[in-house]
Length: 309
Image (cartoon, rainbow, N blue to C red):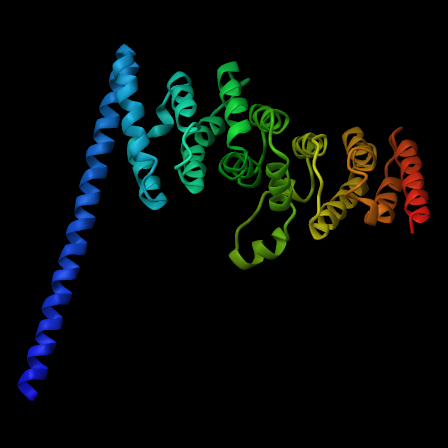
């Protein structure tokens, strides 16, 4: 009996070793395949950069389509090794035009793609963004708005200590250039979640412009609220109004903040019907010429709400 137990245990150990060896072998094989793929893409990239042959570009697109379907952890590592940030605007546009046509690429992979291509490229801009770059972004935003929000907009806004003019132009162009209502709402939710609590739990210092809005942040918020959408998340709306109120105390004469108030009571009147008193309190702090219009509209909406009760 004891011999049988020992034999069984030995069999289990041998089987376990075989499984582990197979697993390691599979991982090595996958890594090997990834390495080969990356080396091929690097070689093709160099050839395209030097000679720009159509056959090289077609092969590059074919190989890249294999790469972008990898599990996202492997994809992230592969992009780092590929140094994909070096890809010029022309090849990047060709790449985007190709991958947005496919429906079998994972959402998270698009987010990683935007982070490793456009995000790094945009962060390095020190002058006016090129028309080609803005055109590519405008086109891809209409097709893949939500990954653009998470892969580009949020990192540019929430991970930058200061939003410079070139980056601001890119951000506002994306927002104004065709983001879907769902994507806009996702952006607002991420910007006005309780980031103070998140900050304390992770010991990460978030940029000051998220609370004390500078001109760039106000311009971004104006672009957001100038879009058509409806906010059903009342908590997020209250968070936004709380910060709007604080910033009107600090900058009562800021014309853009006055314009945001006006957008709230005109373009987004349906969303803010339960928050008219909060908007009135905020508007009273404004010293711009728009204050009278905002308060008049608040009174009109209040009367309308009362009559419907």
